[in-house]
Length: 266
Image (tube, rainbow, N blue to C red; front, top):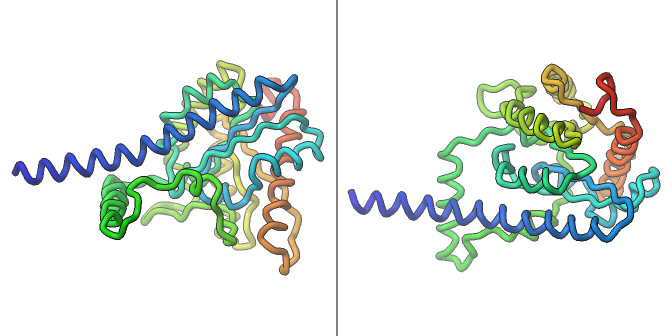
């Protein structure tokens, strides 16, 4: 019995250490963004929360600033916070600090609202990490690689695979996001659901449409970058730059919209 209790305690501690590493790393990034913005005259600060799909679709900070300037958004400070295979609850420890940052805009990728991990999944991930110790691997993930490492496989619209038995357009994280958006609105901070441009597959387009309807029913604005067709031969960087340009065009339009009760901003 004591052995089981000790094993359970060890797993819990290992899991907490992994989560704490993510939280501490990104709290520092938020603080660094605040410092950079404080040295500018009229910064536009955009915080985007998402999973690996958001990271793979977007350029890094300097690239996003260059794209933003071409769309009339000067002095952009763009902070993309990624939790691979994450759900919205994973970002909860960061939300208060994000509100204190008072960003111009907060974007939340639809993928993190579509996921809902089980406790068993967390235990499995922790066990795999602990098993890696025998092979000399670090039990704590490389946070720099998580935030900036990317593959060439650009994630299509939807980003998150549906859980077994769940409709593709279902967003279990939407109530928590709606509560956060309410707090942000009280502080004058718009929060938008970022919905990747629908893929060619009818199922993806239907899921995107259903997700947008759910968000609208909760009074949450939706930003869907208007992508033009890309050549089949376009490489990863070209596709990434195109999606980033579409995203910044949407951000520029959102920021230019009048903030009234009927406008797109909350």
